[in-house]
Image 1: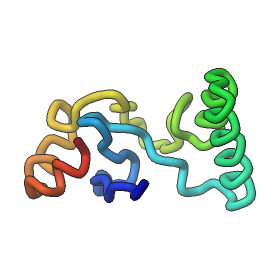
Image 2 (image 1 turned 60 degrees about the vertical axis):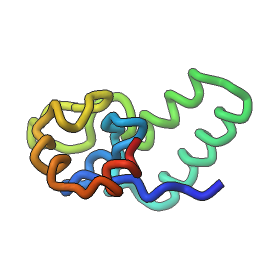
Image 3 (image 1 turned 60 degrees about the horizontal axis):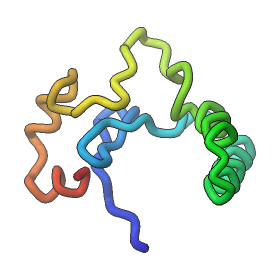
Image 4 (image 1 turned 180 degrees about the horizontal axis):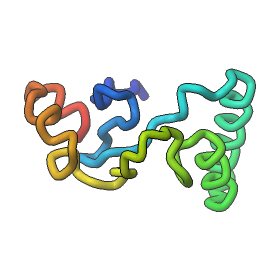
Length: 101
C-alpha cells in the first residue's frame, strides 16, 4: 500500500490524517532510538498490543508530553481549521487537503 503524502504543518509538529492533526515523531531523537521505538511500535501493532504501542508512541514523541518547549499547546486530535493552523490549512490546495482526508 502506497503511503499518502500527507500535509505537514509548517513547523513540522503535525501531519493531517483523516482530517485531524496527528503529532509527528520528535525530529531530535537519535536515529538508533527512533529505529528501536518504530520497531517496537510495529511489533505491538502486529500483536494488537495497545499498551506497548502507546509506550512506543510516547518514546517517539507522538503521544505523551510534547517534544517542543515553546509552550505551544498540543493540538493532536483537532481539525486543523479549528486551531492556530487554520490559515495554513485554508491556504492548501484542494488536492493537498484531500491527501489529509
